[in-house]
Picture (tube, rainbow, N blue to C red):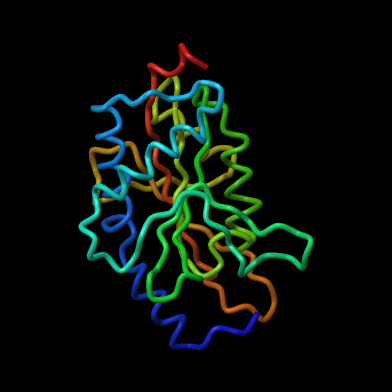
Length: 212
């Protein structure tokens, strides 16, 4: 794939200036609406079912004038290996309308308990910090669908097992979200951002624990 021009990279940085204010606000609005409307969730496939229900509510929270749209299960072709390999696929992503190669991705994981974070941590370490996911972005979000226990215990588990330091998110001080700062392993000759922020959102669904 052709090396991105400096103008392209500058445009990306401008678009993603404050993801906590721009993107996280939409996720929290959608989560609140989901709790209020209580749509049926398929217990056989909780992660995909919740994410699929979350996506239209994110769209409902948007004005329609944003320079991006939200998409369920988009593909990342920037880091795709030669065929017959399949491209990486995100659970959710905000996609930049001006250049749809650029996405701000979100990965979701069911957390049965606050200590069940192995897959959650692996996605951060193996996908995001390797630049396989979110190559053009300097941040992402992990969505933890928590079925039992406390969000603070989740943050403690992730902080211990990644490891990383969890910081508060000033834009959403009352929400169960944190942000951790990392340095990624950038492939040689690639212009991807090295400094990388991971936002951690714990979306609690205690009523679903009886269905799983």
